[in-house]
Image 1 (cartoon, rainbow, N blue to C red):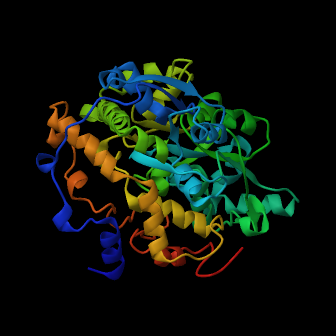
Image 2: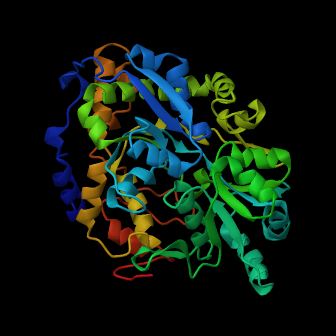
Amino acid sequence: MKRGAAVAATLFGLSAGLVRTPAQASAKLGEPEKADLKFGFIKLTDMAPLAIAKELGYFEEEGLYVELEAQANWKVLLDRVIDGQLDGAHMLAGQPIAATIGYGTQADIITPISLDLNGNGITVSNAVWEMMKPSIPKENGKPKHPIGAEYLKPVVEQYRKAGKLFKMGMVFPVSTHNYELRYWLAAGGLHPGYYAPQRGDTAGTIQAQVHLSVTPPPQMPATLEAGTIDGYCVGEPWNQQAVMRGIGVAVITDYEIWKNNPEKVFGVRREFAEKFPNTTIRIVRALIRAQYWLDQENNKNRPEAVKILSRPYYVGADYDVIANSMTGFFEYERGDRRAAHDFNVFFRYNAPYPYYSDAIWYLTQMRRWGQIPEQRPDDWYFETAKKVYRPDLYKAAAESLIAEGIMNESDFPEEVWKSDGFRPVQRGFIDGIPYDGRFPNRYIDSLPIGLKGNEKA
């Protein structure tokens, strides 16, 4: 075993001798200590596991009476979880991690389950698309995908020569969308800028060729239409809404930037999970069942899920807008609708399992762009991931569902019982650079644009 892998296995107590199967586990689960709960969410289709768990009665079957409440933006959502107004929430994967290391705010938030894979896209205005389109190769008379940011680079240069900033929106400084947009831009040779919190700079625009700023997800299309930004990265249905309204063109999905990338999580305060352990496991059980239902039998339940999500109280967008991506299609440009079976995955590929390596990837991006201002040893990445991501809670919930006959062991991939918390080396990135969570500093140094070693912004 290589040193990084050995350190990680020792740290997490995940040697082969400690692996247990559902048959070996004691799965007796007590009644919930707290039954009345309020969870927050943002109006995005990837909040689906919460809506499905409520509408199909999975929360109630756990003895939980859950109120779901839409939040104005990601900051409000996080603040309300921290101060206890919300018991838990649909969160950006970076939020529990950033809160734990004290970036933006300081709080102990844990992630007992991931909610989905993929589900985001990058959209540009019609004017920008018309400038990009002539240089993009064609295939069967249509633009060849994936479209790299190298085709945006000449447009950004034209803006620079005209004395204008090229501006793009993302949803939050520690969002997947910020890091995916930055990844795509950097892979195409465009610098998205550094943060320098050690100097009080949290704008993230130092040395930037493309200026990124925060816009709440539901406001992205209107902000694009107003000309305040030239493009954005966001979850659904806000890319498809821009396409269907004819105000923008989706140039790439995040599946094309990193195949089956980890996305949203469910987050609760550490103190909540410790005070209400049965409640926490029961929440995870309900979400597992909802995620399984969403992907069951080749997505057969997605049309019903779209009907639920289109209600004003949840996502509140038109059925057709939500249905595009949720039922296996993605429309890049008006009339250019293509199959995208894995655009948003909720259960397949072990999607709900909270891998330590996923948390470490987010930390590497925080370091790459200066949000973590100083170099940290690999062990620091492992220890931070262990504080936040809790596969032990996920496994306990899965084991108890099997023990009670609610789900079958065969419903879960063997990876759930055998994993050491690290995905295999990930090779599905648009730039071809592999990621191994066991070697975070080596990975950071392999990326062509971004801080390396002991560099500071």
